[in-house]
Length: 499
Image (cartoon, rainbow, N blue to C red; front, side, top):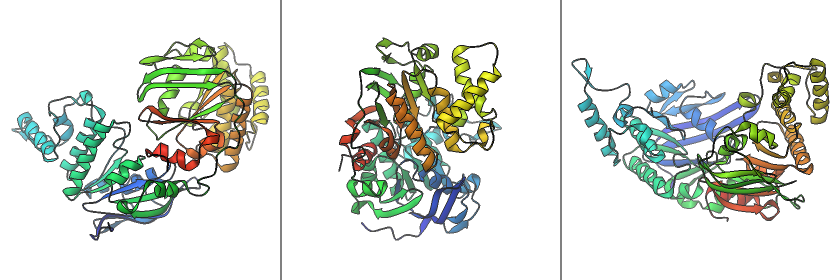
């Protein structure tokens, strides 16, 4: 199959975007034609999100331009993008739960007669919009009663009904079963047959190879290759996504591990379904998977913020009640969030105060002992390598790497038996990443059981002794890191068989 000959309906030329000095996109070109499904793939952090947000006007590039139907835009906004026929359907569904399908489809455009809404006409128009796309869903149903696949179908139908001819679908089949995913695939093929252009974002390479006309691979913010899907295969895509050093073993040796400390049995909640896992003392086990495939459920479950539907959590041989934060902390469970400024730290407080928050929360003191807090802060800054321009700046003034060290120091200095780390090296520079890896390695060496929830193969390569790959909320692989290569991990995470 050769590339489409029709003029592009959506084109990015030389798009360049940085955030705080980090290159999110570097001189990226992209083109989509009418009647084409053009897939974009890449590892987490490759630049996919920045690319699609540039397409729909949510991000304005530093350099380059977006062309829609031949018109050049240098300062595209979401409103202008929608007016030009571009729309994005996110992985996180956006229907109004309490409204019917007809109301969601026609929201803001309900037909009226004599100054009042004509509900008969609204239901007729909504049924016609769904029927034209082959979607069989009763329009009187309430959105909250729909399954994930049905919600996605309705969202796509809504955008088509509003005249959008360029659709960006962001992980539309993430965490869906095979039958539901096929419903989405049939609709995408129908859109292509109707002449729509579809940008398709997915971690599942088997899906991409089956569905797309062309595939663009991003890596480190750069376009590596654009290839007709008929000329691509899984090993080639994996190599393009992972880059150099593909077939090197990640570790030559594994740390010695003791008895199981953190045990999860049949844990079911959210996207996780019947999840089993045991982490031994002195071991770092990584749970690796695409964003939204289940590993994000571990933080609320293990921290006690959410009650599991079923299953159990055991720490050091004792059951921990589900949904009980105090019980999890008392058992020695420490959960370090991946959203350090949103949920982990108080940006406006100083380093010493942030370091003391967890300790004070565990002790519940009536009074703050400032001299003791300052002394603990000095000691923690030295041991964790926290660098600042003066003694106790607001934590928001620190670099991302130093913020991450403050977060780790706050939690890891409190008697850890088992620890969950969410994306601990995300958004830090190379030097800080090495420091964080050293700190996590030291935690495991002290005898703690360390569980790493990650979507980054490189992070797993730098930290873990064992890797559990999760897709669709279920375990698809459980291997010692010393016995797996990077390309095998990428292939398993992306949904294909190991090449």
